[in-house]
Length: 159
Image (tube, rainbow, N blue to C red):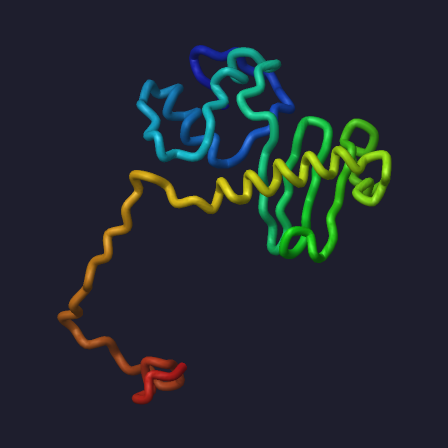
């Protein structure tokens, strides 16, 4: 992300999520960010690459949820890790080849990242305040065609 106020060519390993782009771009454009927007602005990091507006990033892929800090990535597969979990130390294993989740040495890290992950999952599932769904009933003025071999071509409503 570049702007007139930031130096070009800098990089950072600050954790960030896709939801952070809107607040970041809005702040750079001088726009007010609505309170119901989930992300955080990354402008502090654009001005100082050591700034950390977010301590961890949350991702979801199929049946797995992950939390990524600057050092670790922790993932739980299935409902609350019922299909297993993974912990990788990016300081010593950037390729994620050694799963440390079962290690007694890393038990406290797993517990802390699991707590952080579940808090973030719960936060992501709350309804946004201020966002309303408008349900509009559409009356069709032209009949929809009946196409042979599709559910629209059946009289019983089945697909």
